[in-house]
Figure 1 (tube, one colour):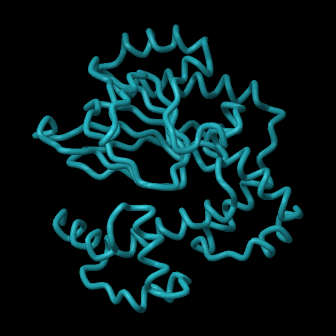
Figure 2 (cartoon, rainbow, N blue to C red):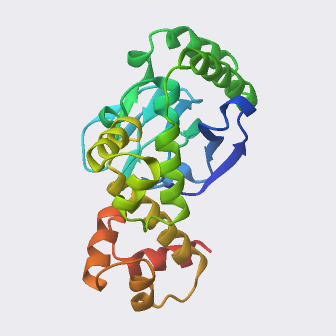
Length: 270
């Protein structure tokens, strides 16, 4: 999830990819973007591959000197917020379902979570793809078409990669809003706790418990964003926390601020 004065246009994936790709997004910063202090990214239930459309394509995380300048960048799942004070203005993104990137890219996601990776290092053939994308960079629809054709070829190459059990487990966690017992989840997918954990780390990037926390906090964020008035005590127990201190500690891990501070931000944006 990106919080800024940005416009986002969403495109549906090809039918053959819908099981693995959530959607495509054209992301463009709005007026006054040059004066923005930060671009904030928060944990969500998808990994993403981004192609930067403008020539200026550097990312710098706030408080660090590390600058990434990958025109094609893959970002695995995040389990904590990140803030950038240097960033491009126009980006086309492929948003993968939790297990979709593993299926289509074939790379263990535990190596790619919480960081950005240069796609050209993972797939040397994308050097020529990058040049094709540059040629049509003024047309987001054509950019998406080229990226999608590449994904369709990856789908054929990955025919033997099986993510069905993990897809079922992710769907169950999402259906339960992240409030699912791991033992019950193991029973439903026919795996031991150890095997399920190993499969999740390889195909999703985190353990099933961490993924459940991400899902739960996405639901909390949606609830806070949609309600002007929040009964925090009731929210704590509705979303399955032991007490308010536990909730606040977890919330600050994900969003870098207290729930009331976050709620105040949401109201200011309305």
